[in-house]
Every structure is written in C-alpha cells, then in structure tokens.
Length: 497
Image 1 (cartoon, rainbow, N blue to C red):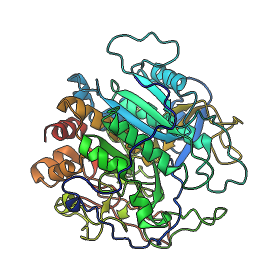
Image 2: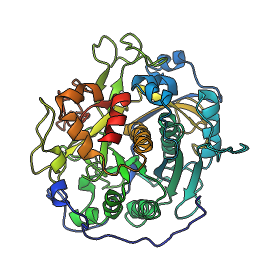
Image 3: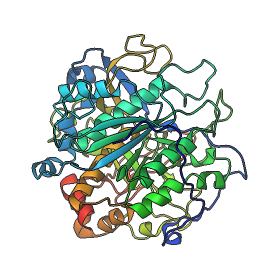
C-alpha cells in the first residue's frame, strides 16, 4: 500500500537505454519546433460535458435525449464492446493495478466513487468511506504526489483554462469511474499532481516524475494519461524528449502506457498569447499520444443502444447517429494525424489492407479508439466541481454543479482502454508492457482483424474548417487508428500473443 509520499527524488533517463529504440521510430524529426524554451502546461482531454442532475440517482435516458445526447451506463458500455464473455470467465482485472495520473484531482473522489458504484451496480472498492474491506476486494487509493490540493476556481487572469481545478475534478471522476467500469476487479491508484501557475516548472515534469516513481516501484502495470499538449507547444524538440524518461523505463519494465489523442481534431492551439491563444494553421498531433512508446487512443461516436448496448440505435439522439448505417463513426474532434517529432515506428510498417498510408518520416496517431463524443457519452458522478452555482449552464462555461454529468472526450476513451489492458494483464499473469507491436500484428492479419477490431470507416476529424482534417478509412486511419475493440476476442489475443 502507498503512504503519503511528497516530492520524492526520482531518477531521470536522458538517453534511450533499451534495445530496439531506433526501430521504434524514436528519433525526432523536429519539424515545426523551435530551438529552445519552456514547456507547455498539460491540459485535460475532456472536450464537452453536460450537467444533468443534482440527485445522487442517475438521470434517465429521456433526460439525456432532451439535450440531444444519449448516455451510456456501465452495462450498456460493457455490452457495446463485448466484455461480458470475459467477465463470465472471471477475467475482470483482478489482482492488477491501474495507475491514473491527473492534475489537482477530486478531493471527494472516494465518496463519489461509492455513490457511482451504488447506483450503477458496479463493485465497491476498498478505500470508499465507511466501507468494510473484505479479502479479494479491489482497492482504490488516492495519492497526492506533491501536496494536497483544494479544488477551487482559478484566478480570473488564468486565460488558458489548463489550471481550472473544477475541470480537472470532473476529469478525475471520469477516469476513475470508467476505468473501474471496464476492469471492475482491478485496483486503482490515482496519483494527482499540483502544477504551479508557472508554465513548465511543475506541470508535465511532475506528472512524468510521478509515473517514473510508479514504474520504478512496481506500483502498477497500466498507466492511463488523460492529458495532452500539441507537439508544437513544446518550444524545442529536446524539451519534449527530456520528459520521456518514464516511458522508456515503462517499456523495459512491462508497464503499458496509454494516452488520449486529444479533443481538437487536427486543429490544436498554442498556449501563447495566454489571453487569446492562436490555432496552429496546419494539422498537428498531441503528446504523449504521439510518442511511439505510448498507445494513443482516439475517439468515436458510439451508436449502439445506450440502455442495453446489445444493438444499434439509429433513431435516438444525437443527430450524428440518426439515419446512419454504422455502429461507430469517427468523432470530428478526435485528435489524430502525423507526428512532427517522431518517425514511423517499425510496428507501423505493416498495416491492414486499405489503410491510410503512414510516411516513414512520421509516426501515425492514434493507434486505436473507443467511444469519446459526449453526444454519445458516459455518465459521471462528481460533487467537487469548485464553487457550485447550480443550473444546467454555468456562468464561466466550466462545470460548477455537483451531481451527474454526461461527459465526452478521448479522456473517456483512454481509461476504458486501460481497463481492457488490465484484464489482458490478468489473463497473461504479468504486465504486457508496450502493446503497440501486438496490436498492429493482430490487425495486419486478415484472419484476426475482423474479429478482434470494429473497423471504423466513416467520419473525419476536421474540427476547424481552416485546418485540414483526415477521413476515417478501412484499416488504420488518423482518426480512429486500427478501430475499436471487440474485447472478448482482442483482449485474450493481446494476452497470448
């Protein structure tokens, strides 16, 4: 078990120290990055959310439909991605620990998780307030990496929103509740950092140091990262490369690292000027998902029945799913494209037939996908949104009401994929480490691709009409990667490959 651990020293890895680094496309191309400078601030990859109810009881599907959305519960999501055969076989993440890294956190996370589990029928976790722990029960633990944080509104001069603690509280609730939904018997270690307002001093470095500690001390075999910044916001290639030490260690230690691909399509923004940040006028991707040592997770609109998950529903809201013929559509805000820092890793040399080509000079992003749009979002319980004001729309545009939200973003995709990897770790009996080579190997085999993945072939990620986007295509594409998981087939294949 963890104990309070404040600002520990961690080792830094400045060079690539494991075999096969060159084959994984770890050499930077450096295009579009300046020579020197500070670091960007990590931002949560929540794209959209809608407050629905202040009651501890979840809202009805009719409440979601009334605001043009459908809301998934644990059962409908589990059915949508065919997880029930795994659960019936006792494959639910038991004995595996998922580490979730966020800024600031949610100080009510344990009690919010308790209500989520009570209302949704998911297993309770040791660590919830007032709960008597029993043998074999999964554990939840919240560790503050560098000081306990009070969730509060940011100062009025904070123009970027990256320090907005109430958004990070909702992010944390989403990550914990939905990683638990997919791997209901896995342990969850939530480690939160406390970045200062000074850019580059305690933002990304603190998060990477926390991950380094997790890897070095064997605290988890899966790490979920629901945060990102465009590669171009790092003012030098080296400043980005200096942050990769935890990923290098994880690849050698059997720890899988996943990252949200972002929620701006191809149109990412700079952090300067602070008051009115500019949009890069060309397609960009976000790091850490663009790192070859990270599994980048993109997003879709999920058009299955949000009550059951056992069939498609082309009649209910949102409009994106109505009168369609596909169970999933590439989400317009899904981050994806081609890296300007990393060249194509060897595992992307062979792609499924019909895939969008990946040039040898660029790493393609993302690797895989999952439900992401809040129009087909997940229900999240959060009672720590800052200065609660009540009402469906908060004056600042940030979440301010305590209760149930429907939430979207690749922040939803990433922790749920972390749950899938935890189940694969349980089946394998050990941490799988970097799963990308296996994902591409399975997808490049015509006899397994159609059974392991749902290939998403429609939609595009041109979120901004001034910046070109990419279409979803057969095989790999820069919106949904290889597609979404047919978990009953893909997870055991990952474990046994």
